[in-house]
Length: 426
Image 1: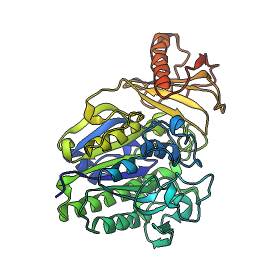
Image 2 (image 1 turned 135 degrees about the horizontal axis):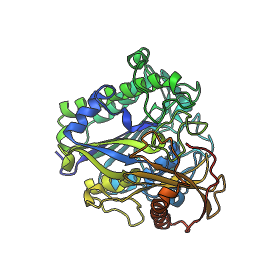
Image 3 (image 1 turned 120 degrees about the vertical axis):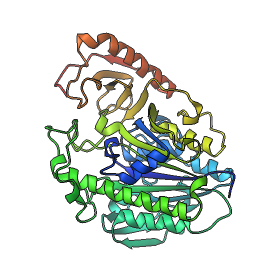
Image 4 (image 1 turned 90 degrees about the vertical axis):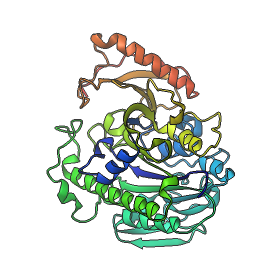
């Protein structure tokens, strides 16, 4: 057995934190009991490509250049796979990439080696939501050859991951499995769970932040949870394989997502906002120092995971990485997120509050307006925007100070922030 731990990073897409529970995800819940269940985790960029670029580079989107979907990562940056390779690891990537295409350049062809972020074993699609649906599709291998599949997509991604795990090797491995589920299917504008899975959740309670608002959750929420259920079953398959092969005790398993889903209740799509539905994500870590840690409400950002993975493998963390390794014990007082595409926004999330600013669609300015302020302790559904409330004026100033501090740390200019002209409650 290698002295260095193996690492299996399981990445879902568009999964809300509140989907992790004994009814929807019993296997993930069991994995959390065996490890650590981080309940206060937020994305640093609530949209697919930028969130992924933050994970692969360890830097905020404005620093790595991937501020929107359809922008490839820079080849000149050092990526986490490069660092694992240099440390003697086998590196493997399976599933959705979303970091090669300029626009949709690699929608129907394989990602060339120079745009794979350093991963040596490759079986992926840049835009899996367009090269597949819930029951069939295509990936591309190391030689850019088509690998077609049929059947439940999440099941087939897991089959490919199990093939890799059964391959046998004399080095530790870093395996990144990137599922599309529970992301909506772009080609049908629906959530495509395995047939019949949605029936388990037809009467499932609607979350407080969605209930009663416009949006498409009434039509889609059961299917969405069906996708989460399917993912959960596939996590069990991976864990069972690690146990049966004797790899489990020396493997760190990390499960998280790029962002959440608000079902068109806050804007005209599914994320890209400061709200809990968009930003609050699951994080379960099992193995190593996290064994039997249990539930923790420590504030964590997605940007903290690259240094955490490297630290777990005994690899030095580059100075330009923006996150805080979980092993450091350093506690955050807020999570900072950059928002794009729907608008150019910045927000800070503390244990109690969410505060955000916006410059509209102007990306090249330091002039912003107040946007949202929520007291999540008193308003779990984020229905009362307190941005201009006199009772919260002092709290807003404190949060603004945190936001400016985080923007400067991320290499941005100090913003000039004006008062918002209030246009509604949520």
